[in-house]
Image 1 (tube, rainbow, N blue to C red):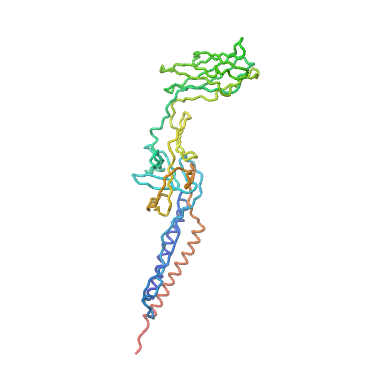
Image 2 (image 1 turned 90 degrees about the vertical axis):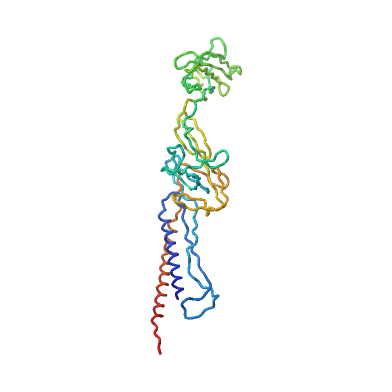
Length: 397
């Protein structure tokens, strides 16, 4: 009968641990990226006698010794993805883990809210030191520093492309406010004026002036019918920048420029102008392909690499370390690849993965564990009463 007490106590101990597991799951109902832990129990058997009993058993009798709380398993199923406001709030739709680096150690997370920290690294919000891993040219996850990319270098303008119609029945047309840049980022504003040649069919005089009204040159634009004459499709004009560097810009009429009669109204416009001035970093985001994207005030962008996604053959080898982070506690293979590669999910920005705790299931398990604990306590109580009765037997003689 003493064995029955220990058996009942094993139930009390196992169900207490089960209660602790369920309470932890429920407490983390609103913890981003939290993965619920299952409650598992397994029976215990041994060979031997029956303890304090009224009979003698064989030494090889298999005896039930109660229950133990089994190895917990983490439920890595997808949690709901919820919209957020942070440009660097990241989640994963599908399998895989974000890679975080901290003091030479590697950690893994399903979701995270990241910011550019004081040292220029993309790190977990709150100055935690956990830096987001980004794939380098050799495919390794490294911490990315953007301090050297806070400025977009200027690029000199070389080409202005035009499009649409220069009315053949008009006598003049103007395309103004054309921003061009020199190699130092200095900006000039050009105006291109078209004056129809009075005595030559299909010919126009092109005059370019800058913001001060200085004439930068003239040239002839010719049409054959309604199409630009191939010999005048590209006209080159030169300006001197404030630093003394010549600025050579080609006016390109080779694509999409026509000359039909449209009264005095021309729709001729600049379709594109290359070059840019100096730009300051205005935003750090992650695009739809999982690439870290920098945006600058000069409307230029730069891609710095793909956010690293870790893939585990057996995620159960991961060990929790708190804060939604996991540590690799096994020896199984680990792949570190880009978002949406075969075998891993897609990285999404401005979304946070919610906890995957199923509250109804937790409450159902809670009832079963409570009843199990009550039943085990009754076994201990009943066995104790029986032993008390045994101790109360008096010898007769």
